[in-house]
Length: 169
Image (cartoon, rainbow, N blue to C red; front, side, top):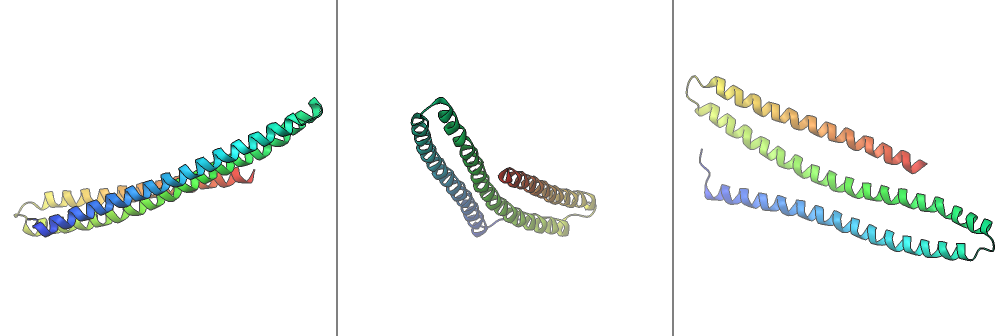
């Protein structure tokens, strides 16, 4: 089986397009995380300054302690919201990348199946065992990929349930 220049160029273009899509997804996710971090830092600084002013304005130690105590729950709530936002951003990026991998694997699967079928048709007599072994390996790879996707989805669902449970507290 030979590959002509057009097939080679198309394969290279597809590879470059895939790499660009992955890079753009990663950069968009990093940009969202950076914006979240900057906004969180700004908000934390403002909250800390306001909290310090509230504590310093207290008339006695009990009022200062009460002011500090009242600031604790909003800080915990904001930390949980931050964690949830980071999780959502990374989950969206992971899902987008998983779609890309699935699409690429689907194309790879078609190409391998086509090559194996072509090899089976042009294989010399007596090589049925080798062709069957290759077909079995391809089927095992497909099964492993399917199992990996199922486990990844179960993990993502469990993590989502944990985040939802933390958010309700």
